[in-house]
Image (cartoon, rainbow, N blue to C red; front, side):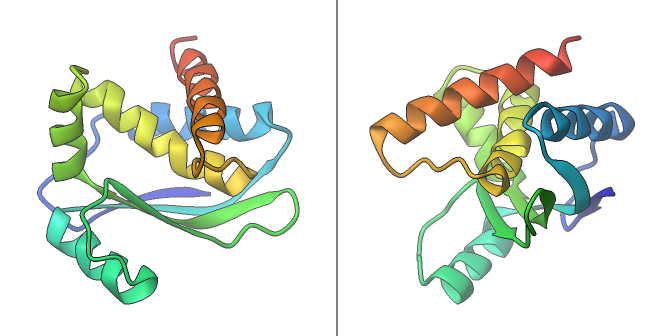
Length: 137
């Protein structure tokens, strides 16, 4: 079950469409959907988590906590709407496009994709693009 939670003055307009899309992406990769919680927040909220749990005193657009068991995808995904908006400007993207990329990025980590090296980042971007294409169908 996918749930969207809000810790800021932001609300998705198309929750049902996004839930179906995330489920399709999970199935596309041969996994099953478990409990997935998205928490939309601001920079301050996410920075506190980043410091507390990862010892990183830096801003980020996403933090994901993976509870996946085998092929059952489960976890909490925290997304800073402020960072997403900044990154959309920086990368010359529509906010919705950048947000969708970040939404699926967390799930791809749970599936097993990493983005530590340049090669891994390239593979991650490719998988994000495959999932984004599923949203348009």
